[in-house]
Length: 166
Figure 1 (cartoon, rainbow, N blue to C red):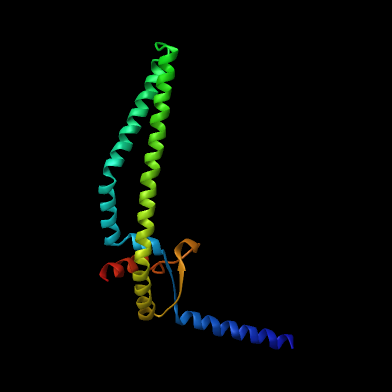
Figure 2: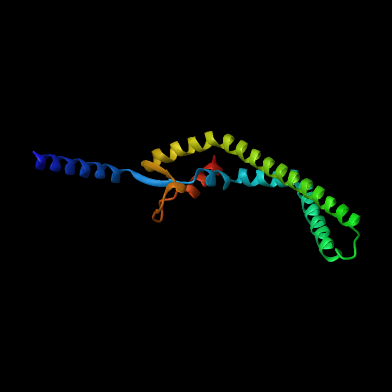
């Protein structure tokens, strides 16, 4: 009885492995594919243009803070206690403004990325359906969850190209 059960399991596993070979297993990084499109490139350029004044201000603040910190270290012996305290307050205020501006820029980018991904999802789904049918795909794994994949298994660039053509 045990022998028959082992033979049955072996036969079933061989049949299943034959089925798996008939269909391809591929990997895909959906976000990478969507961000590799021309639409993503254009959106990135638009966002950089929109945030250019804030980015410039952030760079200027960083430079000002560094200059004040350098002055604080170099002129420490020459400054009175009041001047030191005033300079430290200025550094603290500028640092707070820097952090707020940096957070604003990061939030704007993150929000834009999320909106872009949400708008691209239906297009990605349609492209994937067509790709699956055309190429007899049996399983798509997220690239981030795969430890190893041989050459030709990752379809991310192909999907990005198809998204651009749509």
